[in-house]
Image (cartoon, rainbow, N blue to C red; front, side):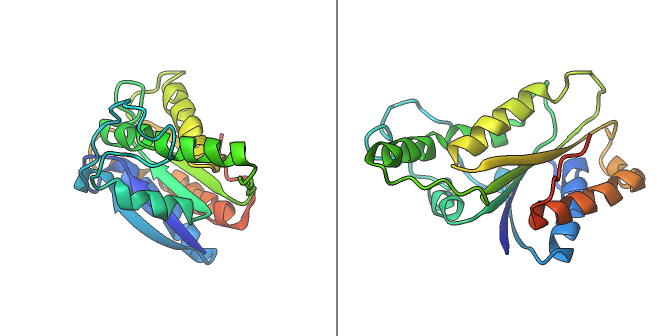
Amino acid sequence: MDILTFLGSPRKKGNSEILTEAVLEGVKQAGGSPEIIRLCDLKISPCISCGGCDKTGMCVVEDDMTPLYDKIITIDKIIVASPIFFYGITAQTKAFIDRTQALWNRKRLLQKKGEWLENPKRMGFFISVAATRGARIFEGAVLTMKYGFDAMGINYGGDFLITGPDRRGDMKKYEQKLAEAREAGKNFISGLDANVD
């Protein structure tokens, strides 16, 4: 099973990437084949709220987001990983999510024509690491991702959220959490509950 993975951190080999690699180990063990896309390597402009996609479901802005639409439409499993910046996802990840407005409009237009088919197997999974331990540190990011996945026409299939790691590479010290992340990856592919409390 193919799986699309978006890395939203501007820092390569950082803690969210280490955690994502552990999840993807589990994905591979369960028979998944991940494609990794690093958002900071792409030129994705912010949504300009022009309304161009309202009637067509197609974004008028042509940049590196354009080929991602077809990838998103044709795949059943998507992972998005982002560290927490000021209680939210990174700017790179947010620009990506904002541009899924075109997919939301595509879904709306197909629903209007009676041509939209819900697919319960289409699932999204969110991975995040926060250095600080605020009680509500992930709330904004999770809500954004739930609506982002909904815009893509896929269900929110769970998340793996870790607080504590700060310096680059600190995530490697959390061996138990990395083991749990591998299990979460297996469960996500197998259709089991991948949520971790």
